[in-house]
Image (cartoon, rainbow, N blue to C red; front, side, top):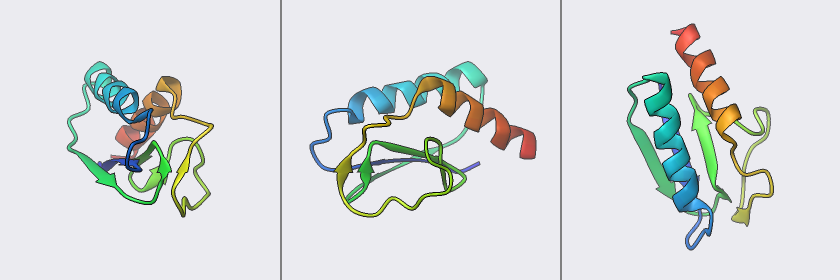
Length: 86
């Protein structure tokens, strides 16, 4: 499983998204290395196996503060789905 946290520089929600992601991994027992990328992303974004948990079909291009900040429920659901796929 590939887990990625994308943020833009100075994102005010980066720390809380990072902690929420760590908590979700701990709750599910999923062992995965989280790759953190800082750049021109919709921030913060959590991707599981390359898919944005909040907007699965969209490409995130350009630096922007997200209005749909990744939620615990969506991250947990994406982790469970990825684990079920193997």
